[in-house]
Image 1 (cartoon, rainbow, N blue to C red):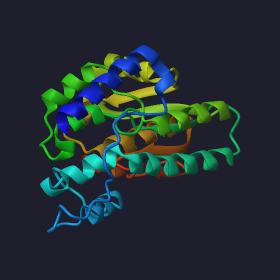
Image 2 (cartoon, rainbow, N blue to C red):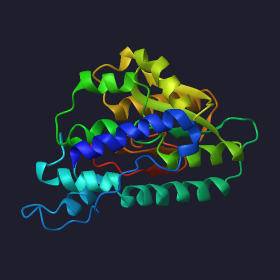
Image 3 (cartoon, rainbow, N blue to C red):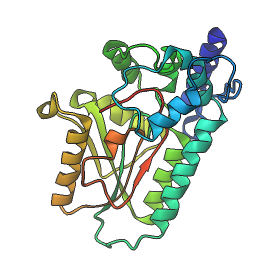
Image 4 (cartoon, helix red, strand yellow):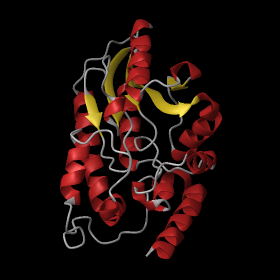
Length: 258
């Protein structure tokens, strides 16, 4: 399966570079069997494990259980991940349409980047769909390729928010030294403008993502911005205060960030 998977992913990356925003409706061309398998995880219900992860009942975990590698891979590459993401982003748009904006250009929506705005699925497909321990070196090498595609549902939401007059702030856990490659990747993926791109500075070394992101959101508010919405794949993107009028959690069973 995996040689075929990698071939499809390589083909998709090449196609995305050639066609740009025209392939925004699909991350991967490969559609393997459904993630709702029940016959190969006798000691663990991977469906229940993923539910616990998404509801923040499973915290502090380091890797996806080995028994769930196939399940997570099938979920992420199949239809269900996209359908789950669409439910979240559609609800976010319906909420955004109902807002009465301030009219001073200070209404902002916060987007996380990894597994929210951009998808690192081509990388995780080569590294066991979260079963392997996170490797900073190989992850940074992937980021530096600037080939991460957009999560199509998030890109659609981004464009709709801009059309409503809501500005976008990207708030990411990526370090400041990845600003150039992150800017390039965002633009390559179809995110062409934003109010701010906030990356993690050295002053937050050793601090959790919750502390970092909530502090940066507080700074935005102190500078007169009104955070009308906030979307991310990790609970740490959303918790800690100053989270905006509404929060929207995208699915992500690949990794956990505190």
